Image (tube, rainbow, N blue to C red; front, side):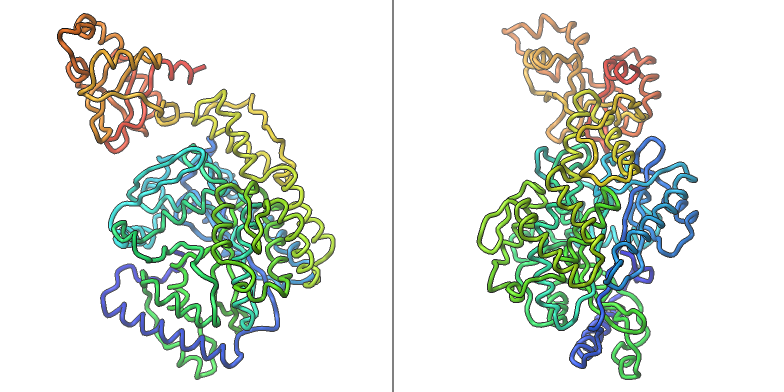
Length: 622
């Protein structure tokens, strides 16, 4: 989504021209590979740091463009939503103090971002999914106002044949339909890059796949979405479903999702890898390319392979091979896309060092993965890790091993060997791998979030619990301590509610009736659940009426008359005053006073999503 020069509207001829350049790029890559032109005598690392912007009420901000303008630094770029930004870090040669240099640059640029955010009445937070994101911030008005984002949204909807459907099941369940790709904007990552010797690409990529599960499991930091406790790393399921372009009606065929772990160990070489990708994924975007990459190559120029890179950028492998040109030389790197942002820079750098150490320290017995490990084990490890984090059981070379034991006894030693092989300073090795080890014995970011969210919910309204958690994350990040040193339970006694809208204080767990329900049964609903207001809905959950305890008294005798059965539809109030989720609380209170009513059903796109009662208002004012 980052390419600024894509064709938003492509005619058939533009697509044909683009596909011609795509084939040309593949031919050029094959020529460079066969003739030893791809850089193989140096290893570099790089990263992309995504972060969230929140306003002074700890809710997603809407000022990314203003903050970006204030920062005025080419390292920064926009993301899909106006509450996210991304930093593209400089590549660093992998030796000695490489990780210390990367950490220093991240901290320097984040400090710059924090200053700019503060000047625009906001703050920055590193987290996989911002806890305080609500349905409100997933509307079009929060999308970064660039034409390419709107066009991509329409393109993805067209490719999948309709709105975006999400169904996530964890401790809680979230099932929702949405009219935009904005759910993808919930994901915030720390993407890590490692340059690979082109002749070692196949063993390296397969090894990256094999270690993905345990590396993810010890790094999880995104357990919540819209207040629901889902996967330890909910980003994995959310990203796959929010970018899935497959038609629902085609779900039974073998068409692969654009967000995918993969289906098999790869074989051949880097050129064969891209041939497979081109064969299995349609071109979504095009761009105008003025010259043939192969013609450039014949003239002694190193081509950027713009068509191939654009296609590759719309295929979201969790481990994604990338072609690039630096200092006039072509290179191949693997981009690790599954690690979440946060909880701290120290934690991110520990994840980075752990992964790079594993990649460079690969034992010889794993040079040919198909001989020692089933691919489906690697894939299932990845899904397990996303679901249950460090509490997962991994299938490792035929044995079932708890993830913490696998990391502690097998993978940390391999990582240390790899970092020593690259001559990384011993102090830095001990520091970063020590953070991973400490996390095993205490808690991951997800475990810390879940424990504190559950604790907050015992005494706070659901929205306030999420706001308190967001504030707690920010405060602990600013302490400078890795998540393993964060207090297991955060003190929120000084928390002050920032609720401003109806959706912030509404009750969303509703008891409802249908118009055909027996009137006496609606009375029992209200008694059993100790409620005085009962919304009446149709089969599509649209509000058609309201039964209140006061109103029910007028029909007391009829409701209890067993000779004449009366339905809910006959006793409900049909002209119901309602509000939207975005209605300010102050306005809701004024409506209740004006009409002398004790509740207000809350709608979102005509659907009943909650209710506010006098009790909610009193609780809010307290």
